[in-house]
Length: 315
Image (tube, rainbow, N blue to C red):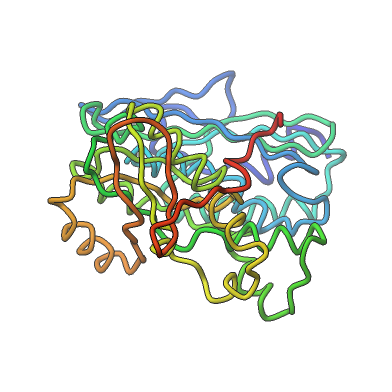
């Protein structure tokens, strides 16, 4: 199979929302009136982000999901994506399943694949995604203010526990792994939450490198500090059964793709209404304070010193 046959068979779909999609030297895209483009790229590398035997359908899902999560954190509506793939060879069974997983999630969020590249090499997947949002409304990292509440969606830490099992750092019985595995293999980008937070949240970020590290990006961009109540952070019953790993998974494990955001305290009830409307747990875990850095406290008010911050590829 040639490169061009591969692209035509597995990665060419109709793109009615683009002026020009797959098949030319570049796509032509026109954002809606009074909207600007929100653009993000993420790369998944075999051996770093996933194992070689990863289920290709789930990998197709995750390859797009991690990018959709970035748009969710900006409150942007997803529109288009490009996909660049390096692979050792044209494995048709793998490509069929991978593209099915990718396009299933793309269809659920109205994303059109408008271009990309394929080449021979070690397995490497890179998506650039394009969304649109009103410039003045876009959620950013730099708007948190003292006395804002800090919230998080979902239950951080499950993906990190599943990864710890795969790495041999803990042995999970089958039932426990089956509870955690979806968070690692098939994260659900919180696009609807990001849109619901427009005009409400003062800052937001997606939790990809660990709750503590990603909250730290909000604090640095906003020039503020934080007081986090560890006991308030939602932790799954499964993860609580592994206390030796719990705090590390929750605070710095990463791969959660939940949203961490700040909201003025006066809008507390509005967040609870969003939680109910979306059927998504949203939990207040602390508050923004004047100063710098993040202090984490246990239920008795004593400070907790985490073992590490967020994930860093070069540390």
